Length: 103
Image (cartoon, rainbow, N blue to C red):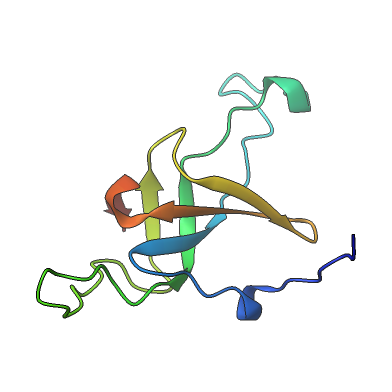
């Protein structure tokens, strides 16, 4: 099997899918204790880096996406597909799995 080299610019989500760069996990607890990698929780906040064209309506037109590139969002904990490009972690998920826009 040949290796495939992907970058953010080569990944274009389809339909109502969103490509999110995952925020870094907390290194310390509130009390200052350093966490090992096995104890870190997966963050649920990330920055939108790519969006699809939107979901198709019954008449064939596209429903516009509610989130835009550059916005920080809060998404469901176990939603989407985890993807690692280089040293960065991303999540590809459906727009319905986005819970809120973080300002």
